Length: 564
Ligand SMILES: [Ca+2]
Ligand SMILES: [Ca+2]
Ligand SMILES: [Ca+2]
Ligand SMILES: [Ca+2]
Ligand SMILES: [Zn+2]
Image (cartoon, rainbow, N blue to C red; front, top):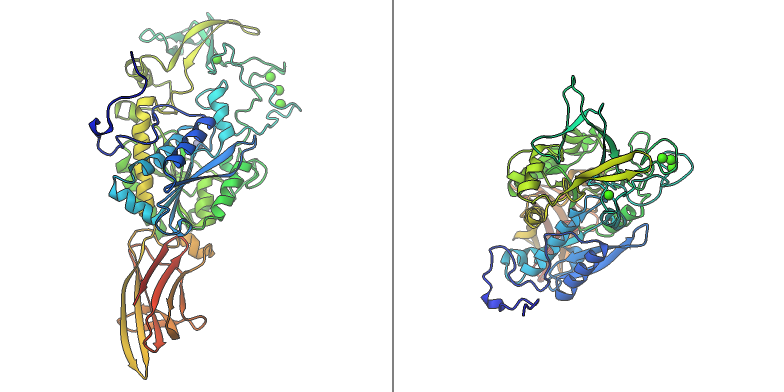
């Protein structure tokens, strides 16, 4: 009899390179999970790896769902709250769900490969990942369980009177045939402008300008529910845009469509903001959207171009260029000039408000269908070919008749909501892995501080000069230029303990002996920044020859110590 339990012994399984052969938490990464599923996966990960993963809720959504955050690090090595951190979230737009799977895959992979993979072990000794699979769990469940298109809902679920008729959500999409899909309605019409594509009967084509067709489109599944002459004019799908709500360069709705009431007026975003404010060790951040195959950085508005100074742009460019190599089909772009202007976006607040190096990836690109460029959307023939030969027509609902209360005999059909923006199953794990690799690279490049050298010089009369060189072994500085410009985070502290300090100073030029003395509290030298792949040099004059220690303490750069 068939046994549902997999019986091959662990040692008999032939490990595929780069993947855990026998994960403690067995998850299929070729499908999507709703909020209950996310909750279960998070809980399984922390139960399997209590020394590597912790789970907390950072707040509640509008409808009261927990916004889960997995904190992944080697809890046996150092204080997690002082390690440079990589923040990851997904699903701010309700329909852009796969960010949550990509984020969870990252948490799963880091924990499952920790014991076998030296690189991951070393990474988690130094760094911590804060992973919030969905920062919009209400919208996620709404997308998955209700009638929707691939593009709806973008919004969360707070009701808004879109057409200002005094009623709220009185006329949204109507899932006429009850399949949890909102598809197109078409009707036979001898004066129509469409006909069925003779090469592919699932497709409609527009007839040439001098010909008559035999079909017309009637829009997406719906009824004029309130009899105001409009169909689908006020549902829960496009109430507001959660990615126009953030407190940097925020603009009201009449300038920036989609802005809700005031910055952080959405409870989910406010919870994220408060989490980030409480974790000043976050040095790098990644948010996941869909679609288009992009690695985006700010600014969202041209007004902010000046806040990205050349050394920051250098860091952004360096990491993102690596991302383009790691994720084929994805292009590195700047929001305001390569995409569109957007005010109040999450990535602008992370960088503008907190000085954190942040990317938003637009996951999924039609490139992934045949590993060549294709235009986006179901109108493109390559989507039909892909659906036909690789998905065996599973992504399309064949046209079928329906009796519409207002339009009479119509037909309903079209691509399902799981196609066009979210990954088909067999490509989901692959792209999750590549995007995770990009996040890991980004995290790897957060500052790593070391005490490079300490030298002593006897000045006579019981005085000694101690010169310490502090190195940052990664490309990211301890303070982005935005951070130093607006004094977002405190300076880095380089301190000496155990010695009687007479004077302390930063050494600007060691060869020419140019220093600037710090008269106040000289045992703890404050430096504004420790540059990426760079050094700072500090010096103390001390009295006596007691043993001493040197400590480096940086909010975003972590800690380093040495004793002599
Ligand atoms: Ca209304
Ligand atoms: Ca339907
Ligand atoms: Ca209506
Ligand atoms: Ca109405
Ligand atoms: Zn989005």
